Amino acid sequence: MGNLAKDLQSAENLSNSRTRICSIGKMLVSLDKEDREALTKVLADPLIESSAIARVLDKNGISIGGDLIRRHRRRANGNGCMCPKDL
Image 1 (tube, rainbow, N blue to C red):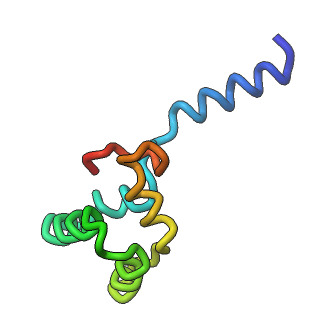
Image 2 (cartoon, rainbow, N blue to C red):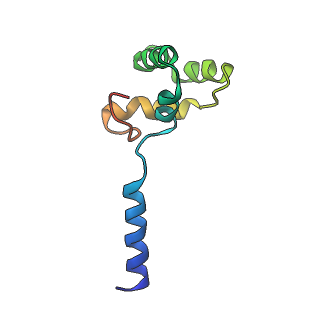
């Protein structure tokens, strides 16, 4: 096996071993139960804009942009982040 093949195989193994949870998912699991439930509820509400959620998070010391929130919300459609749908 050549060097390129070895490197590509290593890259594939590294990719497969990565956690498939985005920044929003990591933040959700780090929150206490009350905050996690509140955030999960607003993330599921399509009438609440991602940018509004980002502003509230920022106000509370959590700097995550609206684009990341939108991507996390799209995971149920199959074109968002890799987080489990129930996260």
